Image 1 (tube, rainbow, N blue to C red):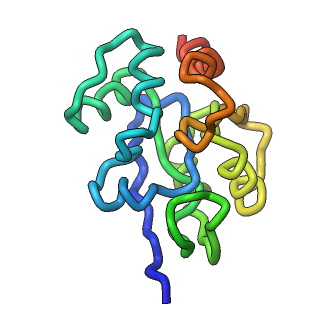
Image 2: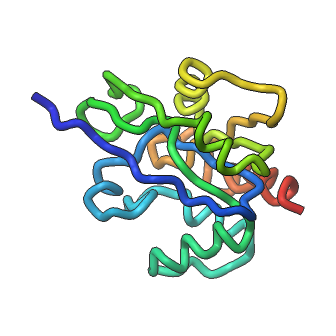
Length: 164
């Protein structure tokens, strides 16, 4: 029987204005206890490029970029089963409690999904409301080879535009 994957708590504070949602952490991220911890994942590279900062190795410094720029991150799913780290293998998923999250962070008005699967799970389990805008970004995963890193950064530029 497969082991159930359990996600991380959100990174958010009272200053957060946008929320970036993935599906659930990868096996490597869970092993390292660091979000987007796989060395080929482009999440941190994209964000640090957007904010014109050098990419640090230190995980706390990476998270500091989020809070400094009023960005919260979390995952749509609290837990799931499934072989490997591909979103297409996710089974027996359980969503996070977004009713409680948005009660705690009502100032978040923009939600960005890090790919279509995160958006699909959110739509299925939570649903869209009129209080927030929802935008799906291209996946930062190396599995998304249809786009170059430069093309992904260009599409993710909307994050900076919203934060201003």
